[in-house]
Length: 261
View 1 (cartoon, rainbow, N blue to C red):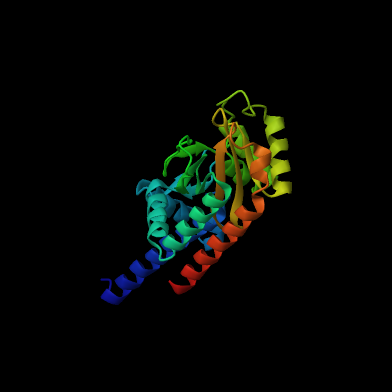
View 2: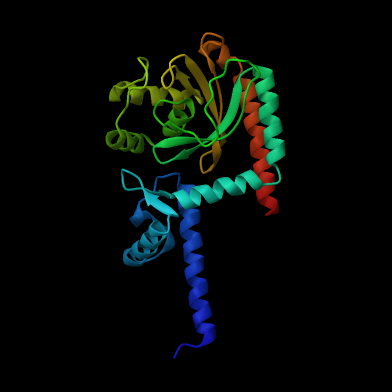
């Protein structure tokens, strides 16, 4: 018969494993498969598979089209709710509002979600005519400034795998649909350090994006988009210093909040 203390220890160990798996997936940015997670946990692959399967059934994890383990809908929703309720949310909104006022166009934050990007937070410009993509809206990862910047941050082999399984959808006449040209575009974006969308997702919309953090310490992407008749892509690029400064400010708020948790 199992003692109460032994049962509690087992439950604690299982909970620890669950939290470890979720932490590893959250930090891996979609680059780990089941075997890699088992290796990081020093667990037999059969045990890791069982735990991962349970978390997939519960909606906390999912596997993408190339077999990498990523956050599931429940975990994504929870993480977004946590970010929304953090004490620095008003400061973050203030930074976005100041940036939107300075540039005169809509600014926001997007986060990767499988093969899409999610508009996590945004502040609209004051122009009567706006391109309204509401908070929570999914945008294609291969045709958006933030999405291309995210893909460009991945290893070259992973970019190729993602592209092979994802394919390229044409949204406008300017969408890049040739695999070779798209990989060249990602290499160029990786080198320049910012993403750009030249009317590739929405006809008549241009956008730029910079990372909030870098490497494993990434909290999403700060973007700015505008109608091309009012602001050209080259004009938006002149505001990259302001975007990078705002991204650094948001990063510092985020790190400060995490240290107090």
